[in-house]
Image (cartoon, rainbow, N blue to C red):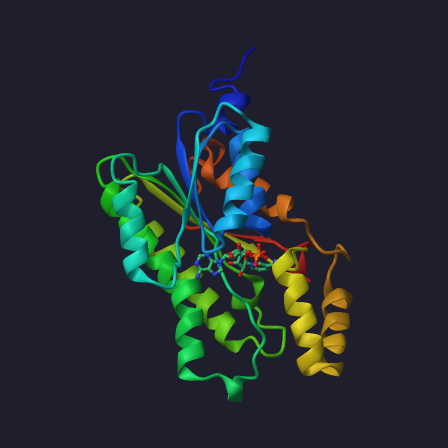
Length: 268
Ligand SMILES: NC(=O)c1ccc[n+]([C@@H]2O[C@H](COP(=O)([O-])OP(=O)(O)OC[C@H]3O[C@@H](n4cnc5c(N)ncnc54)[C@H](O)[C@@H]3O)[C@@H](O)[C@H]2O)c1
């Protein structure tokens, strides 16, 4: 007996275009590579132009058959976001992955209005505006949105990330609200909720945090590992695989889900 549709078809993104933000590094880069393997054409977006150019070359090594374009966009700027969607208006994406994010430790009492606004703009407003453009552009056809949240939005754990935690809590609320409002219009909107993934961003964060908070960081690192059922950090590819699942027809009845990819951290 052959099951219909076959598994290979369900996981394939062949013939689809996916837009991935923050694609120059970490989880975004890993997602671009897996999506290419699954046959998706790609729009790769990042503020780091050299990084995203490099990833577009790696994509070609993974699958020479997919077409890939990269765009240097500062997602904290609504004008630049608008400009991006104008450039891709003739072929808007089938899949949008809102992954770009910044996480910088800062003591709650040292957070300025400007800093707070920047974090909210990059982490939350960009996902909001990108989703708005996506739904406008694909109103007739529907589509898939995958947002990247954080365990910090559900269980704030690290010291000095209040600004980040609230931005990611907004991303999770955005996910569920859009899933409810646009399910009937043919959109599926879900989020992965990563925790403790070994990326350049996390390494940078650790270095900054050690310089700033010293003992507190070592203590909270130890508390984190003590609580972590799998006892190790995750790899970017382990998040990318779940993003691919959500983007693909394997997840055709998954909508409004917030899926932890955290080695069991939240459930411990
Ligand atoms: N790594 C983890 O442990 C972890 C845990 C929870 C959530 N996350 C989330 O996953 C996402 C990816 O994280 P990562 O660890 O891969 O980070 P990373 O720092 O390695 O990559 C983030 C990418 O976003 C890009 N970016 C930052 N600001 C931008 C802007 N204004 N415009 C356009 N691009 C911009 C960066 O240039 C970078 O390429 C983030 O949203 C992060 O908050 C990561």
